[in-house]
Image 1 (spheres, rainbow over the protein chains, first blue to last red):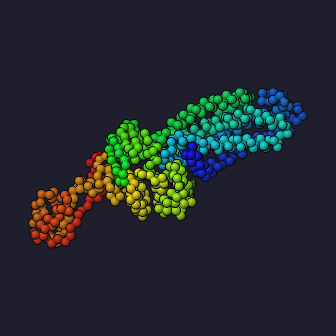
Image 2 (cartoon, one colour):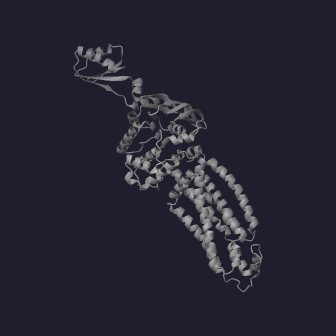
Length: 264
Length: 303
């Protein structure tokens, strides 16, 4: 455990001196907080008269709305709910950036061999590197959500709308699906980083994970499906299975001998 | 202490190390010489528990590779071919990370000890990115020593350094041997190996020869004694050639070069013979073959 902590501290000391990493870790959550808050602010007057158009009425009849919400409130919940998937970009992008710069940086500096020559096990090294990328991502995700809720409480007059953002659907997404996405992202980034020598290339290839997230975002926007509690739970279970597979593959890629003889 | 028995490493169809048998005593400085791609780095990686051999076994500091790899890594220090330092971190941070990974007790004292020994103490809080190549190499050596390893593996420690930095580093390694550590030194610098090593092994996928540098010279080329004379004539050449133990003789300018074993024993007789035959002897010396001659001869023979 002590060695894992050393690796995490080393990673943070090294990687957070990189401007690109700092930019991603700081800037992305700010955007993801700002967008839904701006939407909440700009829609605070919408439909105040309780008369909504036919389209909007259809929207608010969706299962996203709880029974105790009136139409304008439900419209706000619906709009901001669309951005739940965008919130999932925080635990996805941050670990990819950290892991890409960490692994490729070590490869380029040829600093992995001295590290592997210490009594640390490859498992400890892998866990240390993974956690150093996952922890900031999870903290940023949780922190962003808390800031979003605090910000929303100033903009929303209806307690029912605010409570809708503390619904189990959001909580599962933020507190369970978020970390699972981080684990997937960091392990994929690790595997990609083992094959490339440019952190930007590793980052860009790993960002392929953004496609399914955006797919969910646009799918829900287009009304193809609704990400309700059941869907988010199913997503969580599927992610758990995928995580187990990628962690297994990452352990194989992160084998001491493979790093020294095959990583180029 | 390092013992290897038929140690072998293959990468697919390519044999990097073949049937390596070594017995390196505690406190010995062992030079491992060979051309690029000979398998020297692969050997170090196997002996430091980093990669597994395909065949054979080795014992390092009393631990068997493949079984006690972690114990081996705890008791050896490895200076890799490239320093592999964290450029954005300070010298202190670089050493601290490794000291913690090695479980060093008094980290601050160890850092101070080695940074002072290597003349980097004043730059303790400077980032490694600002260091010269020589300073980086010194810091990498401090990192390899921070946990007081019993055996050191140095892979090309002076490669790419300017003559002064290389000289200082060689002196440091010479001082290290006084501490009783076993040093396994991979180098292309034959002069360095000649000066530092008790024995050298010439290696090209397989071990070609192992011996003390002086023994290698004499076994390959014999020992050549040079007699400087006022004048050389056939009579004087014959006065040396007549002895059975003189295996070869050449006259070059005003010098007679005789190849023989054990010149310390034979020289007085040869000198007497020359003087008795009227030689005006001005100087007697030994013509030393460089280790480079030895190395080239062995490697070329192996091809």
